[in-house]
Image 1 (cartoon, rainbow, N blue to C red):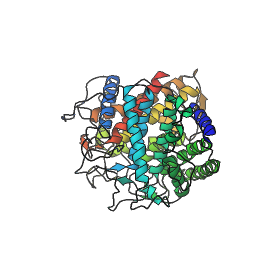
Image 2: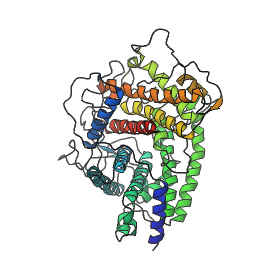
Image 3: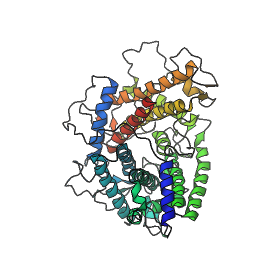
Length: 523
C-alpha cells in the first residue's frame, strides 16, 4: 500500500496550493423574499455590495440541498444544485453538471474563509453530499452512455432527484466532468488544509476513496472525470450555452486546467502513469487553444470554424474558471490579465453597449462631448447573435445576463491585482487597444512600454481597472430587484428581470466578482 507516500505528497500539494484567507462572508443571513418592483438602490456602491453579498449567498444556498428553502421537501436529492426554482416558463428545475460544479466551487471558497465556523460545518455537509451524489450520477446510465466506457459522463443535466433526463437535448457536453474534477480537487485542498490531522489518521483511506483511487476502470469521482477529459477532449460537443456543436474555448480551457491539476493529484497518489498521461494531453490542448485567437478579427473566438462572430461571454468564463490555484507555479493559459482576454472583453463590451438600448442611455454626468471609445461598464449578454430572451427565441434578440456582467467585473479586478502584485504593466501591440480605451478619459499618452510604480500611467491604469469593474457592478445594482434578487437576464430595453428567477449561477458569479474586488482592495 502506498498510503504513507500518498499522505506526504498530499500535504505538500495542499500547502503549495493554499489559498490565503479573505474577509469572512457573513453566511446564512436571511433575506427578504418579497418580490417588489425593481428600483435603483440609493446608497454607495460599497454599502450595496456588502448587503447584496449576504443576499446573494443566502439566495444561492436556497437552491442547494440539503437545507435550501427552495428545495426542501420537494424530492430534491441531497447534494443537488437546482439551476433555478423556476419550474414553468422557463423550466430550470434541473441540476446541470456544469452549473452545479461552478456553484459548489464558490461554496468551497466560502468554506475556506473560516473552516472552523458553524457555517463551514454546514457547507462541508453540503459538499460531502455533492460528492456522494456526483458519484451516483456518474454510475447512472443516461442518453449519453454509461460509466463503463466513460461516455455517460458527458450527460449535461439530471432531474433534481438524480435520475437521468431522457428527452432530446444538446448532448454530450464535455465541460461538466472537467469542472466537477476541479471543484472536488479544490475541496480536497481546502479540507486538507483545515484538517491536517486527517492524513495520519486511520480514517484517511476511507476519506480519499470516493475522490481518487488508482484503480482502472475508474470508480472514484475525480479519477473517472480525469479519464473522461483526457480521452474525449478532442471530440466535438455542445457549448456551455447548449446550442452549438464543435470545439469550444470554454470547454477546452477548463479541460486543460483539470488535467494539469489532476496530474499533480495523480502523482500524490502514486498514479505515475496517469499523471504523465494527463500532463501530455494537457499539452496537446494548450497547443490547440492557440488556434482560438483570430488575428483578422482581433479577438478570441468561442468556437472554432463557427459562423458566429466568436465574441462570447464564454471567453471570460473560460479564463476565470481555468485559473491555477493561488500559489501554483503553473502559468495560466489566457488568464484574465492576458492581452487576448482583455481585447476580447473590450470588443464584446462595445458590441453589447451598442446592441442593447438599455446600455445606450447616457449617464447623468455624460455630455455630448463624452469619449465614445472609452471602456466603461455595461450590461453584457452571452454573444452578439443571441436570440434567447429568457422564455424562448425572439426576433429582437437576447438580453444582458447578470452572470456575464459580473464576470466582466471579476476579469478587471483580477487584472488589477495581477499588475499590482507584479509591480509592472507592459503594454504591447496586442493589448494597446484595450489600454487606450481604458485610459481614453486620461490626459496621459498610452504608448508601447513597460510602466512601473514610478509612472503615473501605472497608477492610472490600476485606478481605471477597479473603477470600470465597479461600473459593471453598478449595472447590476441598477437592475436587481429591490429585495436583491437576480434572475437570469435583464431586459434589453427597460432593464427589468427576465427569464428564470433566482438563477443560482447569477448569484455565484456575483460572489466571485466581489471576492476578487476584496482581494484587490486589500493589496
